Length: 77
Image (cartoon, rainbow, N blue to C red; front, side, top):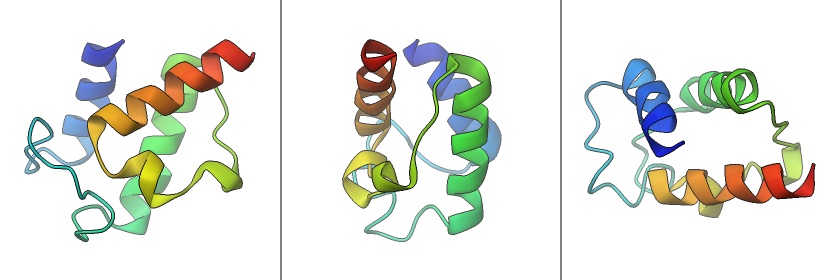
């Protein structure tokens, strides 16, 4: 699952070091259009829906945080 997420992130933003970046949102690394694209790709790849209430910096500041969100959503469905 992590490899699939990494492929999505690198396709959208190949210039970002996702191994070390922990402030993707708070640091302004990802823009709103990046988030829209990431959410759409996650929905397609993992068959989960990310609601507006889950679009928080805490859930998108790092690859690990995004992965945890996906896992949580998969458990709920």
